[in-house]
Length: 354
Image 1 (tube, rainbow, N blue to C red):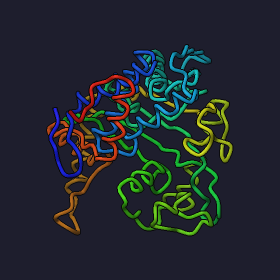
Image 2: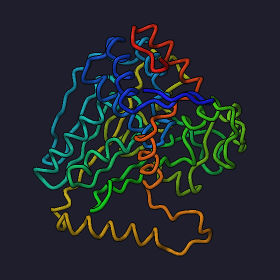
Image 3: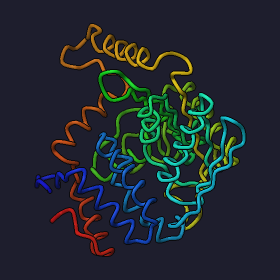
Image 4: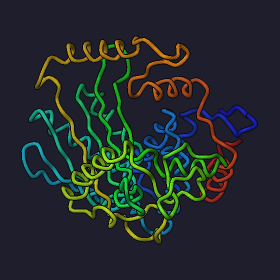
């Protein structure tokens, strides 16, 4: 199951997913919610997006124990127009709510050519690629976005206003797994800052700032993020809040709830937005997939400044990580392993360290 290393363990994707699922179920989470949440967290780790992967499990459990998370939600969906619906997450894990909302978007798209679903009363929903790829598997273009805590300052500001508000667009390709652009509108995410804190590492330059808004590389000092591309990235963050907060009726800007900083017994009331576009309502799916494949290969084959560095299209690093981790397992650092062992003991689950 596991391979030891000086940095922790490599654990098979299947074993990690079973562990996460068992902890959630034994903690009282409805089985189908636990299954979807475990799948979303493990998919992030498999794709190398560790900031949104299994490392979040201890925090997710704290939210559950505090009463923030509803372990047995009653989901509801209200179709407002032929291609539009609103989904109420009933304050459960946003990953589980989000994958159901995307399924509704796909159903609407099958009937009308496109489906748009806003989500209300939700919580942190992990890696956006999990939802965008769900539509791509059905031969559609998938779009997934979410609002986040106010953590990104305006280009000339001294305090944060909007969140890192990520955007994902996924689309099928003819000869490989789907194209997938998935990125925050901040230079990095706060989960990445916390990951560097845990690892005792410095941050890259010009990605985060201290309490006065001055850039810092010290993750212990970083209390706000810098927007990706300055004014342009900050503008995209506002666009995401329009789709996620205003369309869902949830809070926006500085009023969006905190993931970590506030009393985590408070409901988060986050909003999300998902969309699916039926490609065959525009062009033949096979032709689209072939041309997207060709486009990606043209980018990869462009002349390089450094021959040792590949030309990537969005999603290539994640595909490489997925292939490597499917073979070797997901790396679990020692500090995470200790937290997982404590959860295993508390909830009577076999530890992944055995």
